[in-house]
Length: 116
Length: 115
Image (cartoon, rainbow over all chains, first blue to last red):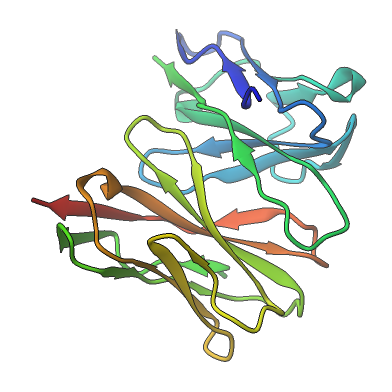
């Protein structure tokens, strides 16, 4: 079974440029998460999707960040325009939402963004 | 207020020894789950172990065990017989089942296993 796929793995851009990250979750996983991980810190949730619906985007800086999950499968996270402080690793994760209390998140390899 | 606290920024352990990584959490939700993830230098987050708030016994997965003390709100990870490949960042995370169901991660502990 293929894991969570993310691309690109690395991206270097100049500030004020746009950038987009793509994530393909594990097949059949209803829930998709985007996290930002700053150097030396734990991941912080940006947005969570249940199927195609964004059920929690309270931590997404909406002035410059946008996300979509068309058809409830793969997802794109966009930053426009990028700022120096956006340099981080952007992690995508997915889980199979069930009624059981335990559902594990599976993470992709992440996209390391450097804004110069 | 921090929901997940990991007070050890870095830890050293001798190969083949056991090590405990501390995690305390804060929640008023009676139903929650606690997770430990490992992040090697390659960057990928690897799930290690899970403990549910209603679980009566401490979770174990191979060399990993979780010392769950509910009254103290602590969920420490114990790694037995450390191996060089255990050197990595370790993150404690919590999911509150009634308060949004999002995962909240702690700041992490960097474990270095010495030969």
